[in-house]
Amino acid sequence: MDTGTHVVMGIAIGGLATLDPVVANDPIVRQTVMIGAIIGSQAPDFDTILKLRNNAVYIRNHRGVTHSIPAVMLWPLLITGGIALFEPETNLLHLWLWTFLAVILHVFVDIFNAYGTQALSPFNKKWIALGVINIFDPFIFITHLIAIVLWRYGADPGLTFLTLYIMLIFYYIWRFKARNNVIAHAQRLASDATHIFISPTFKWNQWHLVIRTPEIMQVAESRNHTINFFESYPFEPIPNIPIIEAAKKDSNLAAFLSFSPAYRWEVEEKEDYHEVRFIDLRYRSKGHYPFVAIVQLDDDYNIISSYTGWVFSEETLQKKLEIATQ
Image (cartoon, rainbow, N blue to C red; front, side, top):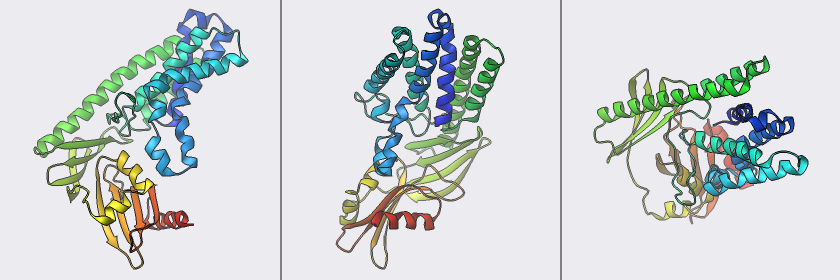
């Protein structure tokens, strides 16, 4: 989920913790649990600092190690220990328990996005991405804000947030059913499909689809229970040719390939260089595919420049490539 949603979820866990008598009856514990829950709700995303290096490192590692089983166990210990240094009189067990719940909730809700996480790492490094909830879901965020406001004006926090999360369980079940209905619809229209990649959007009734068959990949959209097909591309495995093999050594393209399961590729000869371009087909927006990886090579297939990330115009992309060569 987005940072804002994780923040309000952290506050919700802090409020929910008042159902615990140890927390409810001790102001110090109540305060430290709230701090721990908010920090714990953000901790797995501390790897965002990798953006300071470059997009390749960030894309390849985000929601990886920091969302793994060892990290989920380690974050609450680190947070609890850090808080205890400033407030040694708090109840460490209950602080750890509620901080642990905040960390677990963060990783759990992330698996419902199309981006996913490596939540089972190191035992299984496969990305778990259920494609049920958009990165930012207005309903989840707004209902949390409403619950926080109700708390502010006197509602019991424990009961308020318990009611909210019971309601959200049913919301997730409904979204699962909606996703499965879209997939079933796509399978009826493309009975030879081998893979269906689905991405939820900001709108409940709209889903991005990439339908892969043994021969083609079809980019489509489900809107109001109707599937509209857009572009189709031949399904061609990456060829074992010298220019592609040289481009794959680039860290930006390697990061893209580790992340994207549905893409097309193209090789183009420019006036002064060769360009290898990989395009993620899952995020079509207004006829444009903004998530790409570009590698530019000279005649000897030495890498001149490269970039991976989100770009919404060719002009912006070329500027990023120029910066990369400096």
